[in-house]
Amino acid sequence: MILAVCGGKGGVGKTTTALNLAAELDAVLVDADLGMADVPAGRGPDLHDVLAGRADAVEAVRETGAIAVLPCGRTLAGARESDPMRLLDALHAVADAYGDVVVDCPAGLRADVGLPLLVADASVLVTTPDRAALADALRARSLAVELDAGLAAAAYNRADSAGDEVANALGAPVVAIPAADAVTAAVEAGQPVAAVAGESAAAARFENLAQRVRETR
Image (cartoon, rainbow, N blue to C red; front, side):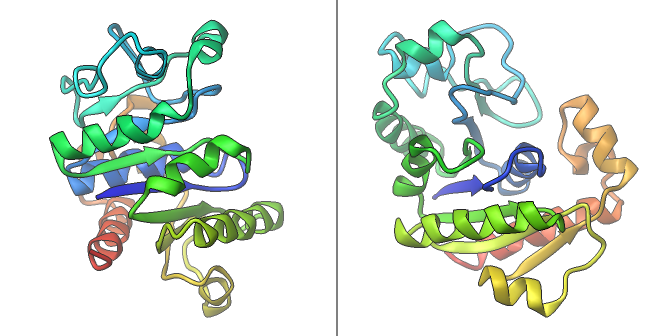
């Protein structure tokens, strides 16, 4: 399964959500934000190299951390040399080798957001209660629906709960994930919440979100 994690507005916790879903689903996390990579990279070939034809996608996956990651480079030169259309084959190759892939999509609604959604079997929408974030999330939802990336659930970050009106507006089950110290500690450590505070409410919410994804298979 290829799962695209998207959200119209930047800064809503999309990468954090993608990382935690990858951990819960035992999937490879692919950082597909070619211009603003946020997943720790380290040394070795990255997605920029893959999309420039310099590296094999499966060989670029790193299995040294809590989750397997195909990171993206952070240089402007690397982004310029990348051919975004190669992303489709790269994601399929990683999915064939590992089974499940979680794609951290770029923020906004640029054309490169549509590529992961085009190949995705399902998607998770990420937003916060902020009005602008919700408005952008609705636009991202429309794109996911248009590209047939079945919307499995929505992560409602920095919120203790979500009313029926939010679920109705987004057209998917909504899991509220609180702005908790456990999430902050996990982000600072570059780890999933379950690895840092496994008994926390936030860890349980990410597990719930992953279960929503499993139910779409």
